[in-house]
Each structure stands twice: as C-alpha cells, then as structure tokens.
Amino acid sequence: MANRWQKDADGILIFTGLFSAAVAALVAISVQDLRPNPQDTSAFYLANIYQLLADPNVSRASILATPA
Figure 1 (cartoon, rainbow, N blue to C red):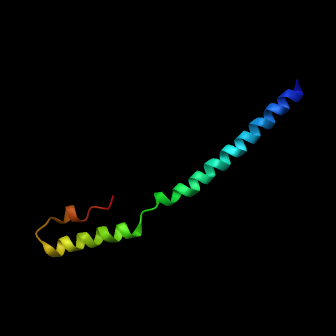
Figure 2 (figure 1 turned 30 degrees about the horizontal axis):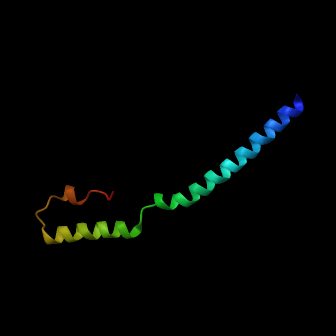
Figure 3 (figure 1 turned 45 degrees about the vertical axis):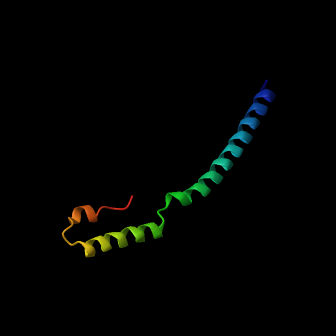
C-alpha cells in the first residue's frame, strides 16, 4: 500500500513540475505584451501636443488624458 502511495506521489510531482515549467514558459513569452510600447506612448503624446498647438481653445482635460 505504501508503495502505491509513493508511485502516486511521484506521478503528481512529475506532473506538477512539467505543468509549472509550461506555465513559466508561457508567462515569459506573454510578459512582453504586458509592457506598454514606447512608440505608442510617444505617438500619443505627440498627437496631444499637435492638437494643443493646432487649436489652443480645446479643453486641456481632454488632451491630458493618459494613453490606453
């Protein structure tokens, strides 16, 4: 009976190790998508500066909204 439990525990540990390795690989790949693209941020601020210079009567609250 103890031998059977040991085999079950070994199987569970092997599965857990393989599962955590797969999850770590997926997280390492997808973490790049979580960071904001600096080019998008620059384009956002440049567009806001252009709007402000093109029409100074626009309310500043709508211009200073943070990028999505």
